[in-house]
Length: 280
Length: 242
Image 1 (tube, chains in turn green, brown):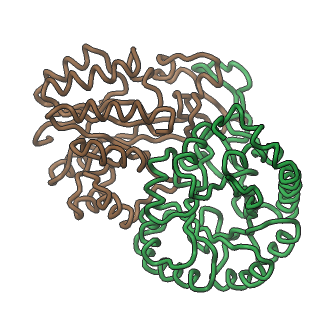
Image 2 (cartoon, chains in turn yellow, orange):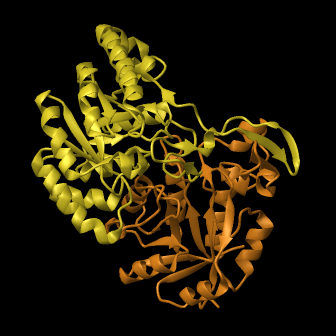
Image 3 (cartoon, chains in turn purple, green):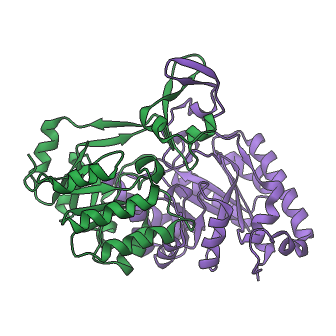
């Protein structure tokens, strides 16, 4: 039986000063990027010292800290990275978010305390892959935004012991989040991406008219949180370490409000699942 | 030239083309299977894919099945069925996979089918760490698809085969929805293949072709010198984009 009370709101932090307001408005866990090893601009990454600076206040509130190491790390930096991971592990970081299978394997051999969370950039699409990652020691799968509901349900039903996290607010796009190479401009504060520009549809040289947009609006699934809880997803991530703290705080507030609603109506969640999963 | 022939790789196949390839002495094998949409590669979709794979195997050619980029619960059974077909023949069969789930299913149930890690099985930055290559080896991979001499050398060092292409796929973005259908409302494989439609930024500064599930798709060819230099090395399986 799913315990909906384990529902987690996961907030991004791009600066040390972000932590206090995020915890105050309802984040249960915070994730940060490890300097030079995350998939976001360096300006929003944390050094090891900064990670330990924020760890104590986060744990004092009974909350968790995850560290993203989800960029492809160059071969000659792997050993140093493993040493850093051990320091983070021994220092009490709750989880490492990783995308490279080779690194997941290496970390699984040296990490003793922290969980390994498989990044959404890994591209996990089926239960066979999830099973292999479970055998490697992964505790959480961050679901690819390329998946549809039935595919997510299939994965969770095959491997129900793992934790599942979903990007609930932010860059949920129909372009592949791990293979999109459309230019990104102005990465210092926020991504300005070509998929959000206006395009014209052409046939040969003839302009047929305005094209449909080629990227989604930022996804916001918090109002339908109950459906995802019913599917067995317990962690809801707000994306965007580079966004302003005011924006992120508003998103966390929305998520916390929605969670409150669904936890107050938890008995209705199984009934919401009829068109998604009938063996509830 | 390639010592033992090459693997042919076309964007589309029909029965005539397959028959010609089966009869060619230069052709060692053929790469079949679209990353996204079998209707685009074959007139009769998956039915042709299966038929042509079988024809190649019966003709004594090597068959390389390229599994889709997205293997999910919706198509995993179909992919496994094709692997089963390949494993039923005595000739050399390979599968190019883009995900470890498909690889797991293949290595567990059809160990005679050689596993190749595909060029699309990667994240945005597409750097492959030594640890990743070691992990492929640990998981029973026979080799990897690449057109990078540097990566080919690292694979060779590990006694892994190099599926060595004379070109690589480049693109701006891709997705699970067909961009052509999304923009025009029609499914038209010929328009996909012909680069008929395109998108242009309103200020004209950037443009892309629409090619089914990819925007801005191009096949970038290597210079011949580089291609043939690596072809001569051990453990290299040459692939010609034709």
